[in-house]
Image (cartoon, rainbow, N blue to C red; front, side, top):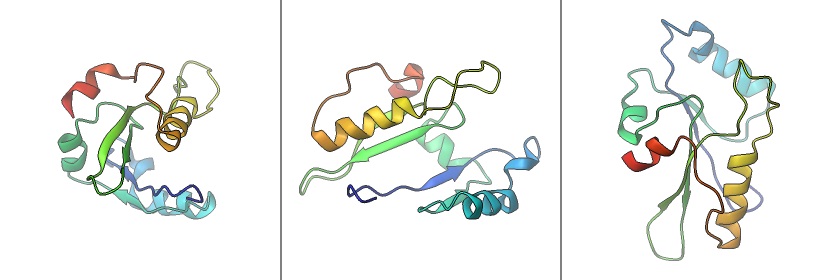
Length: 120
């Protein structure tokens, strides 16, 4: 936020299949980890469908240049970590996208999942 960016987190996971991702647990996580942004629950999954989200979590980074409206700059994963692959959580993909957006550079890598990008 000190770099002039804002964030909103939206969980679209079904609480029937993922009860651990319900609003009560989300509030506990937000407080525990001191999220400096709103953490919202998309109960109907309408937001996820409207944005073409296909994975969890999925990130959408919008950039605003001057008077132009916000434009989608990055749509993809946090990093290559997955619950079952033992790859450490680093946030590398999203961090690189933020750095590029702030410095006015294009993305030097292909966003993952690539198929989701075409839907937006």
